[in-house]
Length: 328
Ligand SMILES: CC(C)(COP(=O)(O)OP(=O)(O)OC[C@H]1O[C@@H](n2cnc3c(N)ncnc32)[C@H](O)[C@@H]1OP(=O)(O)O)[C@@H](O)C(=O)NCCC(=O)NCCS
Image (cartoon, rainbow, N blue to C red; front, side):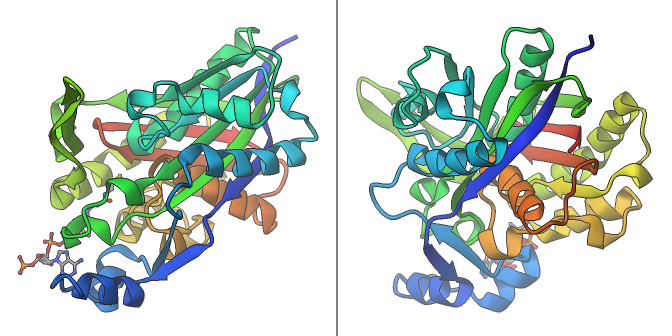
């Protein structure tokens, strides 16, 4: 019997603190930084974002999202035999120990299954699905919990208006399980390390001391151009692997970075804009969490139904990008 992997549960979590553009602009103005609701909405489509309270870690939000996904999947934590957490803002410096191990402990999983973090910045969730899909199809794992969880507010420089207005915090999760029915139909991953400087955290630790900066740095225009170019290409590559056309995609779930990049992608694929799931307006860019947050929103509000075909696309630092075609 052919073995497939299928999404059997989704879940998400947003920290309760919601900050509108107007509130953020007022906060930045106290330090002499000028911005406006009009500028942020027109350039990015973002109206608000959520921030985790001090002391709330990526793992805390990941656990909440995971519990929701497990409930939908009708599984208990100990049914999970592998945890993959995609994050650039792990609980511990250098992911040591990994946030996935912290999530395992906080979920009370005692079965000794595997747990590790994936680092592909905003493409992390798509990378994690691709890894889990391969492991399930290889027959080594049965129920994989995949989480994208980020506290980007911790690495934002609130004196840099070109970046701090764009990002937010949150977590999204899926349970990907072995199935006799097709679920994940195609995955395609890419990276171009020569473009690493356009979106990065230019710091490292030596002798226990930070060298450089711990803040996110972004060349916005360079990222914009790269993202627009690669997203259409990788979507078509994934469609070709799945043996499908764009018209067969019911829902496009791009990484929620910027509504202008997202609109350009949906247009290039020739899909009606109504078939794109949008959460960037209310959540900002939550990096590896953005795709599972959007997926869960559309599953829970009934837009995504069993049998629907979903295209998920990530793009981000590294430079990394990738796409997944899934039958729900
Ligand atoms: C960041 C981004 C929104 C900036 O939009 P843009 O149209 O390229 O804007 P520019 O960088 O050219 O800046 C235009 C002006 O707005 C100003 N500006 C930048 N941020 C601002 C802010 N928050 N509020 C008000 N003005 C701002 C700039 O200083 C510049 O002023 P100047 O013309 O006087 O120099 C856009 O480049 C972008 O979306 N890039 C991709 C970002 C992304 O998706 N990243 C994540 C990928 S995973």
